[in-house]
Length: 541
Image 1 (tube, helix red, strand yellow):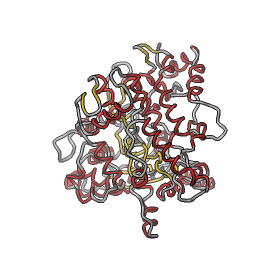
Image 2 (image 1 turned 90 degrees about the vertical axis):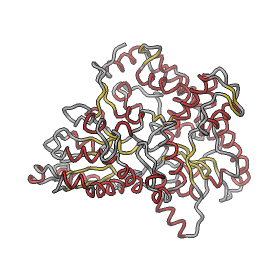
Image 3 (image 1 turned 60 degrees about the vertical axis):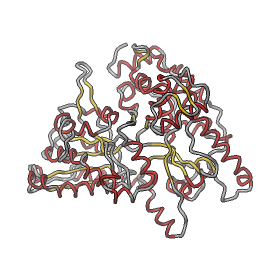
Image 4 (image 1 turned 135 degrees about the vertical axis):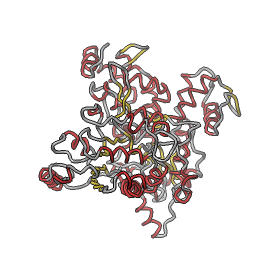
C-alpha cells in the first residue's frame, strides 16, 4: 500500500504543527458548538481518498440531508499516518476535534464511554431510501469482525463500521499465464506451474535476458507475504476450517483453553507451501525483488518481469498513474487479475473421500461453477467433504477491515451516523467504487446492474472481485485478523513466535525450515508463558 517516504525532519514539523493546533482539525469555539458541522478524518492509504471526497459531495446532495441539516458544513482532513486516528481519539474530548474518524486500532475504545454505540442507530437501522437494514446488506463475516462481545453477558454491540475491506491475494499477468497453463485451483497445481515458468525461462536467466519472466515479483519494502491476513492465514484456515482458526486465537482445544493450540497442524501445512514458493534455491522470485522499492517492483510486474505478485486489490488504484504513463509510451499493458487463493492440497488429509489432488481440483472447479452436488465430472465425495472444500473456497484474507468510529462526545454525531448509513446506500457504494477505481465495501450490491456506466470502466481484476465478493448465493468468509482477538492483541499469541517468513525463507543462506518455525513456537510456549498470556488477556484456563 502507499507509504510515507517523508524525511524525519518533516515528521518533526508535523508533530509541531499538531501541537500548535491542538492535534486535531482545529475547530474554532464557534465551530465546536455547531451541531451542523461534521469534521471527518480519513486515513489515506492504497485506496486513496477520492472515495471520501466523492461520498461527501454525494451525501450533501441528498434531499433528506438538506432538509435535516440545512446549514450543513463538512470539513475533511487526510494523511497517511496509520494510527493518527487512534491517537486523536486518545486525546479525549478536550483536544480531539474530529466527529468521525476513519482509521485503525480502535478495538480498545469499543465501549459506550468512548464511542457512539452504532448497534441500533446504524446496524439495525434502515439504509436511507431502501427497505433493508445496514446489517442485512453487509457481509456477515465482515459484520462479525466489527462486533464487540461483552465477556460477562455475551451481548453483541457495534461501535465500529467498516470503510474498506479489500482482499490480499495473488494477482497475475493473464497474458503471460496463458502461455504456461490454467489458473491453478490447488497449491500443488500452483507449485507445478511455478516450476514450469522457471524451467521454460532457465536459459534466459542464465544469459541475463531482460525478457525473462520469473514466477514472483515482490520488493524489499513490501513483503506482503508477512502481512497479517496474508496467504499464511488463508491456507491455514482452509486446512483447519474457520472454526479451527477462531479456536486458535481464542486458545481453545476440544472446548478447553490449552497451549496445545500451537500444535495445530494447519499452520505448519500452510507455511510449508510458502516455504516451497519462497525458497531461494527454487528460484521463483525475481532477484530484483530484493533491491527495488515497491513501486519500481510493481512497475516491473506490469512490464512482464514476473507472472505472479502477492498484493492487494488496491493495486489497480495504486498503479493507475503508472499504467497511464506506460500506455502513453505505447507500452501494451497486460491484463492483470487476481485469482482466488488456491486450495491447500494437504486439505485432503482432513477429508475421507477425496483421493488425490486431481479430484480436489475437479471439485473446486465445480464449486466455482456454483455446483452444490457432491458428485460430478472428475469427483465423487461425501457431502461433509464437499462442504469443507466449499467453505475453504469462500475464505478471504482482508486488507482491512479498516474501522470508522464516532467519539461519544462528538457534537456532529448525528450527521456522522447518517453519513455511515449513507455509505451503505446504492449511491454511496457507487461513489465509493468510482473513487477507488473499483473496490467496493462488502455490501450485497450489484454494481453492474445499478451503475453499468461505472462498472464498464473497471479493470478485469475488479470485475472478478465484485462477482466473487458480492455473491449472496455463495457468500465469502472474511477472516478476522489475529490482532482483533484479546489473546493476540494483549496476550502476545500469534501464529509463530518468530516472524519474517518472507525475508527468512527467501534468503540465499537460509537454513531455517517451516518445521523449525513450528517447533520453536511449541518450545516457546511453556506452561508459565501460556498462563501469563491468559492472564494478560483476562482469560482463564
